[in-house]
Length: 128
Image (cartoon, rainbow, N blue to C red; front, side):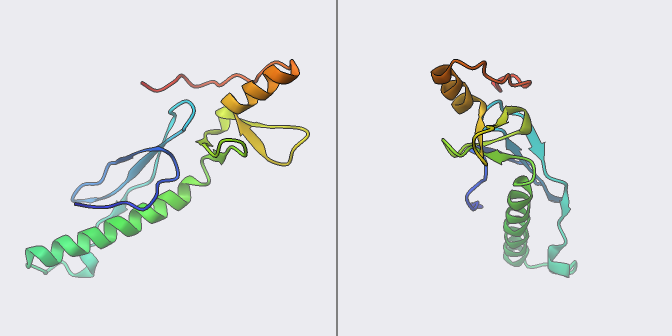
């Protein structure tokens, strides 16, 4: 069984196969997907390895490294809410004028409800 490090977003999908590694990360607010580019499986640079367990171990190492790289790259596609800690897409992120940091749509709506301001709208639909 392959184990993952901690995913940036709450929901992720492993799209990897024998050819390479790719992962999808989803906005914690609306579910919008960001898919990492395919990282080819290089078999550790040893195409002639025939030992099944060795191939499996090399695949797992490359898989883990590709996940860690994709997870780090996901930071460029999602924003962290300073209130609840969710990672959300740009459409679900609202930077408050009074703060340096921003809030997700839900926390912003809650704060705007308290102050009487109109909440920002998210352009994405909730993922099912």
